Image (cartoon, rainbow, N blue to C red; front, side):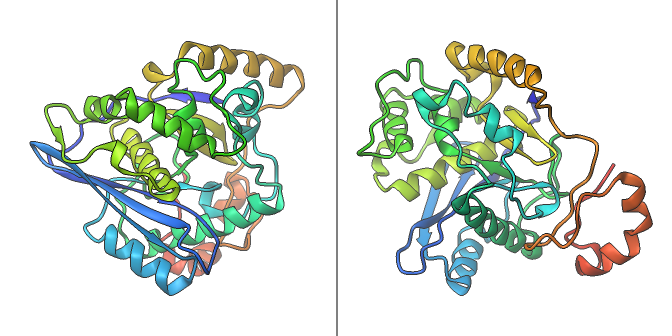
Length: 313
């Protein structure tokens, strides 16, 4: 399912965060970014870390120490932070027709997809436990806190006026797309449209590292959600957040339309009849609302007395 949002007024002063997830314990291939603003300016802070629990926690807590309206994480996130092992609807929608032009999200059903899901969920749980993120106000929530899933390559790709010929096997597509969108001023225009009457205190061009760039795009994704200006693709297996509907280019809109018809014809429809619960290793299976109510006391006990438990309505 593809859904658009309703704009939400942003506070005069605030911040959002983005986390690019890696799993290397030897190289700092993960990064966290914080976009902050006041009445006159917009700034960014980025720091890299290794996938070592103590280093990951310390870095994320340091950069996002002031809290955030929303944090977007580059990795599969399921409702209730359950573990994933299937080819999700969101991934199908962003693969059909898109792969030849801008690539595709990795499948959660693959080995790397499951590994990324595990590390992304660790980051999400850290944020939830630390209470660094505000409550979720958007409709497609996966948790009571505003923690969402980003995928920088698709986010950047659908902003391109013409993606033809930009993919390059020798360089990450997201870096190519980021470079084009930074050079044309598209990224600055998007951020400033969400935070008008403010000046950027940084240049998108100054960031050359792949992980820094990915974390910044995740933070922009979070800003879109905080402002209620985003497009969400997915279902109960998770929602991948894309730019505002108004910013997505016509060629991408056309592929969304084609994919909706093709998936429906193949009998592939969004899931919306069950609630997913989980804690890293998938503590619980899918539950109906009735089953959830019956097990409420037991589940709440496991989820730290309900302090990190996703609300269900």
